[in-house]
Length: 361
Ligand SMILES: *[C@@H]1O[C@H](CO)[C@@H](O)[C@H](O)[C@H]1NC(C)=O
Ligand SMILES: *[C@@H]1O[C@H](CO)[C@@H](O)[C@H](O)[C@H]1NC(C)=O
Image (cartoon, rainbow, N blue to C red; front, side, top):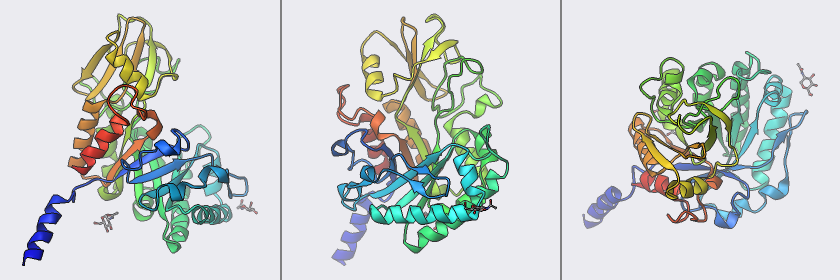
């Protein structure tokens, strides 16, 4: 009886509601000795894998050596295969190539003691050289890949778009639901600078729309992204809510116009790491603004710098949303953009630590 009570008690205390945290890790950013092994449940390694003309993978073996042991089997390790078109369009259009690809993926996973693979095609149907048939071909590709992975107990993760405009046309969601073990929803890059079509500042990863945003602009946020995926039929329990750690910086036309959608003359990609932004935000030189509707912060200065980024408050809002939504877990892109040295004075990995704490509470 005592043992039974103890077990029940223990069960209540243990984090049964804990959400898995999946972290993208660009190999050697930072050095593996600084990797946040205690903050992430799964790691998805980003290396330099390419798909050859014959379908087989080409990659640098040295990059992957040692990772299986680094995490000591306590964390699941995936490796991502990222490509824009036309590689994936070509690969998925020919079953001979798909089989070659699948064989070489399984060999790689075995050789390096990895748990699964993550497919990141940005994006089927969508880009200039993509094809309508990408959508159904990607479904076939996932079916064949999964059937081979399954035999050896390997898992399949798929990274998908955040913007509903892409999500609606690019994917065979039935196939995703059937074959993917995890679907990483990339809830970021909702606003990207373009000199001709979008010379404005804006939020990289707002949680909700702002009041004046209607039509397509009203959909460029994480909430609309998640709603779209649910409407399309993606099961919640394999959906992973994506959270960026990186920032997007812009140069304003004039610092007198600094609200979201103010004119910008260029992007400033050299500023994207949280430690830089965090130090700016503490400096006293920049103005910090919290947008209540978007649940997102930005900062700007007299020098015309404007930055959309994530902080403790936006992460709190996102984690609460993800939990309420009932997702399978959260995904973080990427480990190396957080303040892994603790340069800003809030300890190592302040963003990831917050995510991990909230995921386990
Ligand atoms: C598929 O790829 C294989 C290997 O490159 C090639 O021999 C075959 O002709 C291709 N099939 C089609 C239908 O293009
Ligand atoms: C998700 O839910 C479905 C249906 O309820 C279930 O069959 C499946 O095993 C669940 N998958 C995971 C990863 O929990």
